[in-house]
Length: 505
Image (cartoon, rainbow, N blue to C red):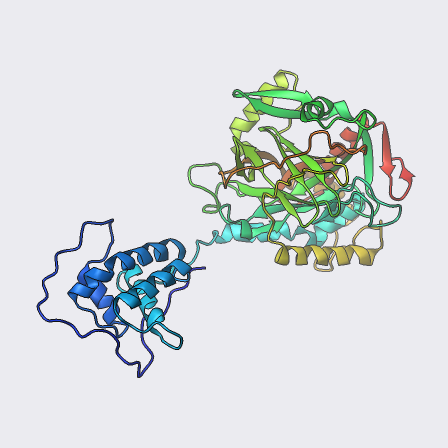
């Protein structure tokens, strides 16, 4: 963090330095980069710190002043290179820079004055999202606090979570196992500020503790790649063979869990939280924490797939790989992304399995103890504040008992059954979301060393459909959720819970 030192001396500071020489002729400073101080400005800056220098001395120390000034403007006054140059300036002026002396501190303050061109300038506060978007963002990420919404979920025995347990291996009736993974969805209030991200709400078919899943033929999962400006579709087993991650025994079927991500997505009337000239959108990244295991993760959206090797340590962010650069994913209201809707129509016409609102997170297990592994390490989420929210939800869920619906907060009364007909006539409260990607934020490194390191264990595919609130949530929305869940039932050869030994959806 940049630190600007105060430009005033403490009362009673002794004046230091060589006495000025009168009428010294000094050639003008050489031409330099724009904003470089002349001799007079250097003399003025040092005088403000009680250090008197004359024209000849200003010329002599100017190279080190410019060096310190460049470092201060680039890295802040706290940079060690600024202090090093200040020591050199003190020695050139014959000043005491030893222990107990304030000389170096005062010279750094003079550099700070020059950097501010007349004194340190107050930094403008970071731009704040517009109030309407900020309010909508907060309401959506805290939707689980709304009694009516929670009552509708309870009627269907759906479960809202901020952290989803997407485990490949877990012991019966336990939260522990040898392939434990937590997954979160981090939506940014300000697209350019990853620290503004908060955990979005996911609606699961059943609780984390019960973890009802499906077994689906692996070739039903399609992965998409962008090659030469066109989309190429491959089955998951085909892509695994290309990556050197195929398994002879475990690639016939995969574990599938499906859920809905309820994310705040700005409407066109909400301005300022995203780059100008683009459709309104909210940037997001998934995070995954595989605890003690290592997994190769494939993410797939309509614009293509990305890959990353993740391992134990902490939650690791998953970005889109856009031509070797990492970019957050983005969520827009579908009607605002006619380009993606057009791409969806074109690819479907070619017989491809695509959906603008679908996100695949595919976990491929890597052998324990595999050597030569280098993880992707694309970044970590702002965990402290956001996880506090997730913990509040977890406590509420635990209070209801494992496998039981979470009780609605008492803030508002649940809808009465007599209102069902009226609610059915209301417009949907959730709208379809189109997933794209945002601006590049640095190089993308997927990790390395995974080829030939596949563990002979099942693959888990998390299927997430993105929706955003556009009105009052109704029973019709819950019916749409149910219908979408049922679509995956048709693809399954088995459905149930491995951790509670329950079968049958």
